[in-house]
Length: 561
Ligand code: ARG
Image (cartoon, rainbow, N blue to C red; front, side, top):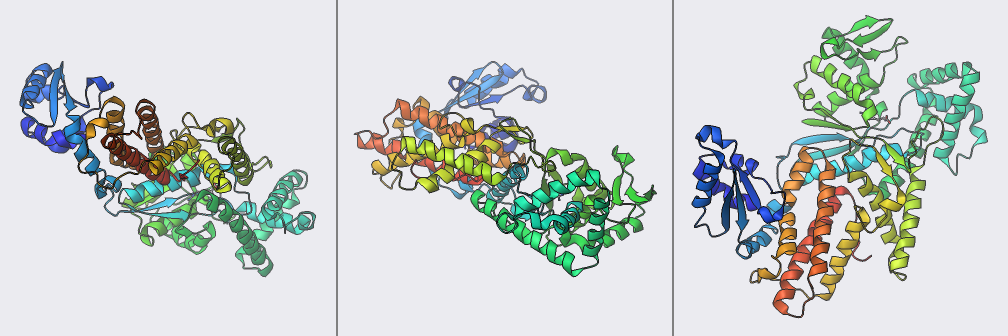
């Protein structure tokens, strides 16, 4: 917003476009150097003048400006805004639609593949990241004017199923399916793997079940449906706690009848080659290993299914952009799939994106389902929430909504702990750190927000903000906070375009930090009415931005902590 106040003038003087000027403007590393800086180095060539010379000219051109003072320093012009003059305008801007809903998406439809856990396996903490990151991206896209849809691509087809059915047939009676369906499915799965190492016929039994499923065998179908239903029940419990919804839940099996047409199309386009009895699409041109399309036993595989899925998402769901929020270990798979789509002549394959992320470790431990070492997400959440409850109780022994707030803080700590750093990095989740009310955590932001709400409850703030004496909020810490607040729409757009929710998470941490600095230096609930009112407005805006940003990240902000 500050940039817009000078970009028109700068553009006119320099005969540049306004957006070019805005791209060049920088925020100086230290606030004492000014509010904005304009580097003149790139202009030196076209203007055939030395950068300090251009800077001096600009300083002179802004001499009469009412809102800003320009100061040439070397090859830079540093701009100092007349705080009290512009503050009212800035607060006004913060009420506009463009501030809360900056449009950069123009209604473009984006299909987000997110969460996508596997049926009859526990919702492990591994799928949690996809859910959390996908959800944040969904809200970011929505907020910035895109038309995103969320698709849960359930893993409801594939070898693990048939193995599970086979195991169920053999040992189903040994486990407690009624009370604990998923844990039992897992037990059966693990047992299958253990016993298959001793007895090879088990694998054949699994394949036998696959055949039956494909042929529509009644018993096979009944078991499959049962597994799907029980798993979805459990997943839904997790989604509820995380506050996540989907526009479509379409499992891999949904594409069963679209596999043969894809293979046919690949054939017709001359892309398939026979290799050791299997059909593949060679991808040497892209320096990739061949993409396996049909296995030697005639069954189709993961990649083929993703080809059918992508075509469906583009043609039926009208996705102009397809995003896949899936762990980094599937990078090769998506490279291959996107490349095959390109070879099929689909221009829309270009903007397909694999949104990768690193591993999530719990106190240093990696998760694996195969060996039964999986950590059940529900146990993790329960644990975090129990700790949150104990901490809140310490601070606030008679909290009226203890349970609800502990859930918000506990779940929020997990979500924020994931989103606060670049998604490509591994996350090591340490319960104690993530739940701390100080430092870079969700609970810290929640705590700051609750502090603001408590101040507002006591402050009897007036409605009108037009005739304010802004000098009470535009000195050092106040000005510094206000400048961060007006960055909000820019941060939303940048985080969306880079697919980096952490930019928003870091931003909201900065907002909290700056607010607390202001709060510790100035009395907000001052006796003087004009002082109090101006400060209350700053506090109120801070609370609004914090809650809004946290909601985009998927974290709740209780009014009282
Ligand atoms: N179910 C898969 C897994 O757990 C993830 C699916 C990701 N989405 C996709 N379209 N391949 O590994």
